[in-house]
Image (cartoon, rainbow, N blue to C red; front, side, top):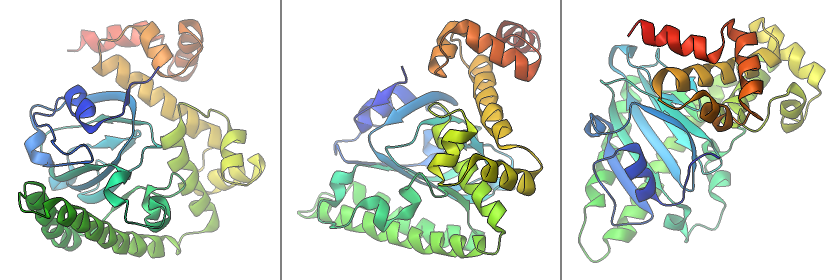
Length: 297
């Protein structure tokens, strides 16, 4: 069973953050201040709160990964995650920016559902997109103001904090709208493929057939396959198996978990089924792959 963090502090402790929050609904930190304490590899987990991240990746050399979606070639980007996502990461030193964790209780005054007001929290929408260096600088001022308010001690500091958080989310929504408009220039096949890949990143532990993803996207399996092949030259099932294979290799390479434990973490019925899948798609057994990795360390 995947780890499931119900409180922000539970997650902070498990991930190795040095700080803790006195506010059960909110925590924010500069990304550069998470080194070297926070784990460089975090296996798949679930959480009951939201994440907004503003990331600067200098020289586009460092890799930051959420739901297996690596953006090593992006210099500046925004990340949005909701309680519905399964998360995992591998990361390298050198990135900067801001991480904001919060619960829906921050917005009890908001009449609309959070995902309706801010569609980047919806599983069916892109939650990881590039921004310009100028926009990164602009948004950094908003995030920095939010960070300062986290430590406020005046009478209405909590109310001001949540109001500033809401303002930051609306600023992000403007950036998201700009991103969405740029996506309209893509073909229908590319748009469907983008949505499909986003769903695979978020749901690879739960859904493993083209039929399941086609149902989520309200299209036929044949139409999904044809669209993905048209946009990428690969069939849809390949994206599903590649995602699982990538996660399996990461867990074998970067964790000390035994093969049986990894099999169950990835929701295989057992080690034998996992080993058969892994060998089919890599040409090696999981044990052979681990020995190969260890031999070059």
